[in-house]
Image (cartoon, rainbow, N blue to C red; front, side, top):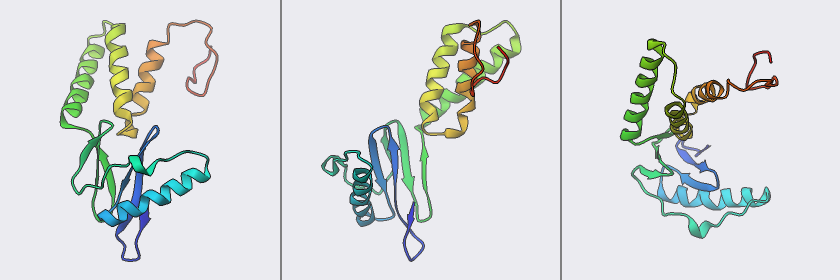
Length: 154
């Protein structure tokens, strides 16, 4: 993240796989961040096509299922309200199933894991949850080796 001599946000980039979005406190700063990012990425050997950039906007907009916003001091990301409601509902459903103690059904848990992985792009703090779901789904396999992801003995 770059800061101007006045302490305002100069610009930064948000990335999703091979898609970049520049964010800044003004339209000019957004446009100025593009060539700087393109130059740096070209130095790293990655191709960046500035002609494919969307024009800077002053209001938050949906991009790769994430809403990016900026103010004078920071850049943030969030998700659409309906996705957040769905995430809370899935978490509540998972908690109810665990409290019943009957066991978890394979397909619904696999579907929940996929949704939380999708949401993890926006909120990195939920990373342990899809990882735990994956280990639960994959726990039936025998002769598993010790890995950095699974710290239990074989």
